[in-house]
Every structure is written in C-alpha cells, then in structure tokens.
Length: 310
Image 1 (cartoon, rainbow, N blue to C red):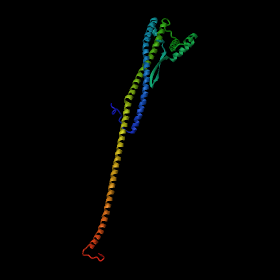
Image 2 (image 1 turned 90 degrees about the horizontal axis):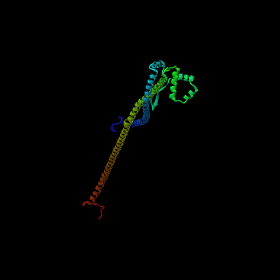
Image 3 (image 1 turned 60 degrees about the horizontal axis):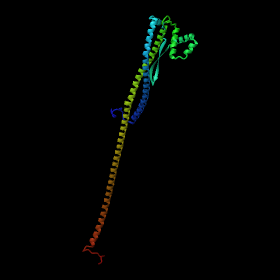
Image 4 (image 1 turned 90 degrees about the vertical axis):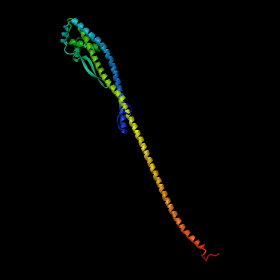
C-alpha cells in the first residue's frame, strides 16, 4: 500500500500528533523487547533441538539393550518370573515430577525422574544397616546415576525382593537396570519434546508480533505522523496567506480612506478659495465703477469744474 493510504484515520491536530508520537515510541520499545525475546527463544529452541537429536539417537540403543535384557531374563529365569515381578511391585520406585521453566517469559513444562521419597528412605535405612566402610568409600565418588541405581537396588532389598534367587538373578537385575535407564531417557525425551513444541509455538507467535510491529504498525504510525505534519504545515501556510490577504485588504482600505480624505480636503480648500476670490472681485468691481464714473464726469465735454484750472 502507498504511504497515503497506509495510515490511521485521524484528525490532523497537535494533540493527535503527540499521541501518535507516543504510540510510535511504545511500538519501537515493544519491537526491541520482542526482538530480544525472539532471539532468546531461538537460542533455547536450537539447544533443545540438539538435545532431542542426541536423545533420539541414544533411545534406539537403550531400547535395543532393554529388549535384549528382557529376552535374556526370560531365557535364564523362565516365563514364570514375570508373575513374580508383578506380585513384588507395591508402589512405583521411580517417579516423574513436573515443574515449570521460564525462558524469556514463556512457561515451559519440565519433567524430571527421581526415586520416590519412601523408597529413598528405605534405601537409606537398608544401606545404613548393611553397608561396610569399604562400600561406603567406593560409593562416595559415584555420580547421580550410580546413586539412583544404588537407591533402587537398596529399595528392592528393603522390600525383600528375592526375584531370580533360584536362577537368572543377574539377568533379571540387568533387565531391571536397562529398563530404568530407558524410562529415564523417555522422561528426558518427553521433557525435550514438550519444551520443543512450547518453544516452537511461542517463537512463531513472537515472530508474528515482531513482523507486525516492524512491517505494519510502525509504518502506519510513521505515515500518520507524516500526514499530520503535512496537514498542519498546510494549515499554517493557509493561515499565513489569510493573514497576508487580510493585512493587504486593510492597507488597501486605509489607502482608499486616505485618498478620500485628501480629496475631501482639497475640495473643501478649493471651495473656500473660490468663495474668497468671488468676494474680492465684487469689491474691486464696485470701486472700479466709482472711478470710471468720476473719470466719465471729468472727461465729459459739457461738464464744468470750477476747481479745474488750465
């Protein structure tokens, strides 16, 4: 869309111009924050994707080992060991706990596998009654995986688990450890898959918002501000032109009024001068008639003047 149509429909006033400028500042800050959020989500997204690839690569080997261990346990202990295992199960020893992780304001579900509290307490009691000093020293440097395996084994011992005591005990315990590892890997993979889906949805939403602010909202605000500024400048020019016209009309009226006043004064002065000239002519005419009369009387051929001496 062109710059003339890609704008908001507003009244071009100074107040609206200030509001549009504030909205543009807010949109700019929001765009910067959302851009940082998108970068953080993208970084975590790629990290989770790498972990998923690694977990899926290990999942094939773990499941293959688990199924082979199950086949070995059935071969060594027989099919009847399945009923013995099911009868010996009371409560789940390995449990999954859910929590939340926060990544740039996005709540991501988090799943972790751990030994149950009751099983851990039983394992601690059994280990305290049966472990020797040498075994305690050897287990001091073990990692979290070995500690959890030891806790599971101690919990089984505390329950009096004698599965495979007659035959196939080692294969049954190996199968148990293999499936525990597979379950932990499945929990970790479920955690990664859930985080991947959540991050994917949040990243798409954030990118849409960033693109909307960058390509729609900010250009519209900028075009609206330019439109309001142009309209205000046009109004200012119109006002300036109107003031000039008013001033020019006033000057013209003042000049006409001055010309009329001057013409009126000149007419009055001319009338006054004409009146004064007519008075002097009448007086001179009256005096001139007397002199002419006297001259006429002096020059009369028949007249007589006693005072005239020749």
